[in-house]
Amino acid sequence: MIQITKDTIIGEVLDIAPQTAPIFLSIGMHCLGCGASRGETVEEACAVHGVDVEKLLKLVNEEANKQQ
Image 1 (tube, rainbow, N blue to C red):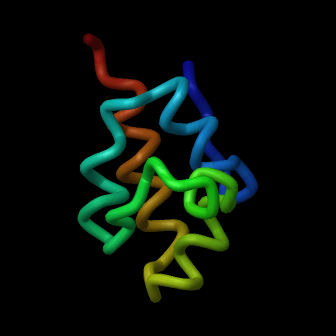
Image 2 (image 1 turned 90 degrees about the vertical axis):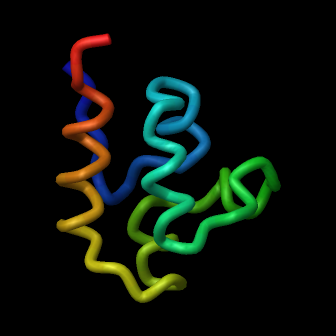
């Protein structure tokens, strides 16, 4: 089971669960390939984009753990 937390680096999330990219795009992270966004934690990205970190974590963890 994948466990993504507020301290997880977005680049790591995308490496282990690339299917979560549309969730990040939906909050306004349109530059997922650039170094700055890939180096941010989930919490930092939420702060920059005005998103509730707990709500985003719920969505990202659900998507990351879906059966492929």
